[in-house]
Structures are given as structure tokens and as C-alpha cells.
Image (cartoon, rainbow, N blue to C red; front, top):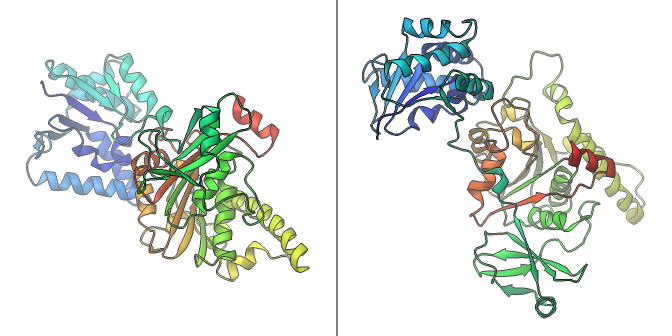
Length: 446
């Protein structure tokens, strides 16, 4: 097979510095303009800057093994090369204005195509517009997909099965049944319905160690910090959230399905009512993750407040519902506030900017809007979990605010697919909106 030549865009290396080594026996060409762009990112403290510095270290180590201009041979048999040819500019000038670095990168691909006519030249970029322009001038262009998943086929966490009424009646009263539904993943739910009989249904959860389907042991209609499940998807989610043996729970779904509210209610229940964890920690990415909060006046919490407003909104709902129950039972007059929980140490609202390097034992951690994380950032967060810590990820892969991330390559989607075989991991995709009829219509038609 002839050696292929891959031209890497800046966003590929910033997204994953390991991309240098991801093309096996083929030649990787990095335009000098890419090095200049990367150099602009290296001084910050965010994930982008750390990746920029890592790329520099990789290339510097390769430089000691040979000439990067001529190409350095790697153990995989491939070659890494940096182009600085004047011919690149001359080639690009025939087709593009040279005031854009993207055009110079495409010019490098054109130069390589003319210099090596017997090789397939492919431009790799996470920028759709760059791929479109490359295709327009006859250059093959691809997205960087080493860590992507097929979103349409992504694991939902539950399976709908319709069975005969006689079979349904036979198993309806049993606490567990043997698995006869094929290969299932740990903590996957099976939603059984009786064929032709509306309203006859039952949700069972797969226990891998016994290869059986069991009734839900942790949620059976009770109030969880003032709320109850409104549909069977939320029942499944609460069963996972309230199970302390499931250390990582991911909830995905469109706006208004209750992801954040369910996670927060379960966290407050476990911390405040059951004392299973010492603290509830809630965070969400500042778009983009790691971006400095800026030199604005005020404390860290005052700077972070605008990003956490959705958390405050959900917390107000939960505290109001919970207080109504407490008032009926105990005739208590004073209503606790979010600030009270923070002051007493039960609740912490933490920017993800500062989570690197921390160890978080004995805590219930919620990462909201997790679809705005890269796979590498997701790894960084999951590895913060210490002993007796439960981590909950919530997000909607269709609502991504970060350039070069999409529904197939974001950290939430990748985590769901890569961890679905683990006994201590569970996932549920929520589809039914419960915020309001209007919100559900907007999510459906827009």
C-alpha cells in the first residue's frame, strides 16, 4: 500500500496532541503556519494552552532524532515532517488570498499533491469550512475521528421489548427473571410491555453478575428531595442515581427532560437526608472549559455566578418543594437558602477551571453541560474522583457551544460509549420533555 500524506490543521493538534502519532505508517506533514498558530496558545493555563505546550515537547523530542524539515521516522514506520517551502506560498497564491492561515494550510496540501503525484494527499481538519475549501480545489479532506462515536447508534441505556400477554402476566409479579434478551450491558434497563395491552409495562434492570433482570431496588415511587419521577425514563435515571454502587451515571437528552433536576435532587437526598456523602459538588464548563474567569472585580464565586444561574434556578425549585414537605411535617418557619448549604459545607459550586490536580473523595459530583467537554477534558474530570465518590454527567449532545466539537466527538458521547461495559457505570438517554408543553414543542420542532 502506497504511503499516504496527511496534512494536519492546527485545530486537530490542539484537540489531541497525540494526533501526531495516530496515522500509523503514513507521512504526517505539519505546515509551518500551524506551528506559528500553536505558539500563540502556549502561554495560558487552559486546556488549549496545555495541549499547545505538549505539541511543542513532542516535536522537540522528534527534532533530536533527525531533521523535521526532511522528516523524522517514528517507531510505527510513519514520518513526521514540517514544511517551510516557498513553493507552498506560490501554489496557494494561484487560488487564494494569503491573508488567511487556512489558505496556507490548503496550499501545503496542494504543494504536496504536485510534488508527490504517486501518493494520496489528505487534509485533516476539524473545521468544516476548511474541508469544504480543500474539496473545492481538488484536495481530499477528512475530519479527525480517532475518538468519535456514531451518535445515531449511541447507547441509550435501555431497551424496549414487547412480549405476549401470557408471558408478561407470568413474570409480572417476580422480583427477578433470567436474561433471555441477548447480550446486555451492565445496569442496562429492559422496558417490557404487553403486546396489545395499553398501560401494561414494567422496567427491569440487568445485573451482569447473575445474568438476570431485576426490579428497581432504589427507586420505587418515593419522593427524592421533594420530587418524583414523571415518566419511566426518569424512574430509570433515579434508580441509577440513588444506587451507591454505580459510581458514574451519565444522563443525556434534549432540553427539559429533567437531567439536571434529577441529578441535583439525588445529590441533595444523598448528602442532606442520607449522609452517604460529605458534600455535593456541582460544576459546569465555562465556554470554553479552562478559560480564565477574567480580571473582573469580585470573588471567585461572584465571577462564577452568571455561569451557574441554571443551577441556582433548579436549586430554588428543589428547596421550595422540599421545604413544603418539611413545613407540613415539622411546622418549621425558616426556609434554608443555597448560601446556608454552602456555608455549612454541604454544597460547593466549583468552576471546572480549578478542578485539575484536585482529589475529591466521599463526594457527590455533578458535571452539568458535559457535552461541552473534549474527551481529554472528560478524562481529567473522571480521574478526580476519590474513594466513595459518585460522579454524574448531564448534557445534551445536540447543544454544543465549543468549536470543533459535535455530537459524535464530545466528551459526554465518548464517555457513554467507552464506559458502557463497566459494572459501576450506568447511562440513560431521556427523550420525554417534562419542563412544560411549550418547552417540549420548541425542543421538538427547532
